[in-house]
Figure 1: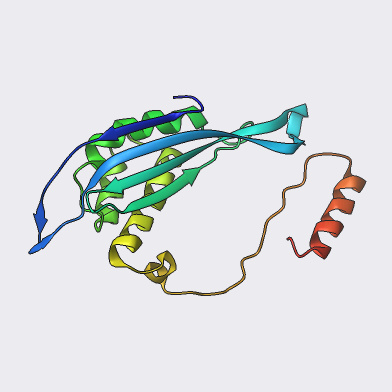
Figure 2: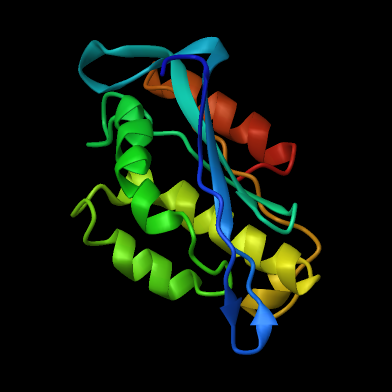
Length: 179
């Protein structure tokens, strides 16, 4: 799958602890190239202007969905963007038919099938928590101790360019409230 969509499906029907459990039935992936408005100068003279983001949607038999995303940055991370879809495809037998309210159990099983590839499993972790929150009818932050702040800091990466230009950009962006 390159710059497209792939989807896998398994129909399931189970009961858990006296209630109908919500089972994962569809895993859909999109790989989206994200091109920056300016090229990013990396160390050792490397230039990066496009990264590939992999977006995951998990659908459950309850008609709810959970979303996750990973965007391995090339050149300085050991992660491989095209490996995300392959690893999640390998994980499909672990994912399908599982109760969405068992995030930790699913992630534990995923750690061993295939072993490693944590970057590829991060959108699965996000999507499972999102789907769990949807199933519980609460905002995602409620599962993690409640709303902590209404404002989130923004991060701005500065390209490896002339140090004086880097300093100028840092001052400019800090004045705008970006750290």
